Length: 309
Image: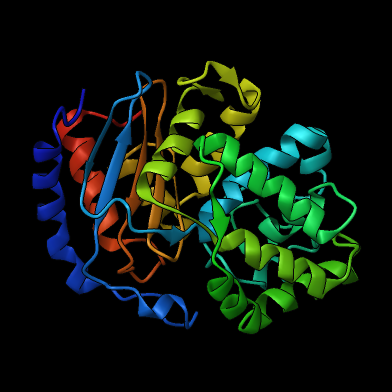
């Protein structure tokens, strides 16, 4: 079992923290640009309820693209894989997460996978409900169930900041709407999507979610099957193939665990059958991943043989 004590884990954090100076916070979203680039924290949540942590794990951050895994799980539960994958693909892409180029050049408007922005917008469009607010409430309740924390909410400041700067996502939506992949008001969908990305939690909450995926959809603290095993399997597979943007292949080789990052600096990891990981380190590399967070996972994977390959 990796890191039996917080002291042991803290040594690894201090080693990885040296790399924060090489990264940069996501200042293209103004509200995220105020993060402290030197921050680095981690929580490991085990099925027996124990949590080992290091750094300021109580500091909250927004999920950003990590939310794509959660919304995907929700729509797979609601509508099933056949419905979902008629509208969004399953293939990795070597392009940036916010690229429009594949939609134009492949001859079909169907996004390649649910982890790029175009695919994630289609997935959020598929959440069932009578209104955008109703759909967001359904999503946030799902997040609360995954974390066991009924106080989980979203950061209004970050959501507004993202909404005000979401012109590229609007372009993706209008392209998809032109091709009848999206069939709702674009501004309403952008509002819902930015709130989804602004869902806020700490490392412990994120590790709890990672643990549910790691344990095939079961919350080991309650014994409840929150999502079907096959839904958890599909989501973990996307985390391996597409979860770290266009650095996913290198990540799979060097680290080899299902993981999903977000431009706030969060990383959720799920070591299959073992434990969940929550990381926050807002200094990003050029691909948009937490630079010290990836280094920390690399050290953990190497020291404790965590790779699934």
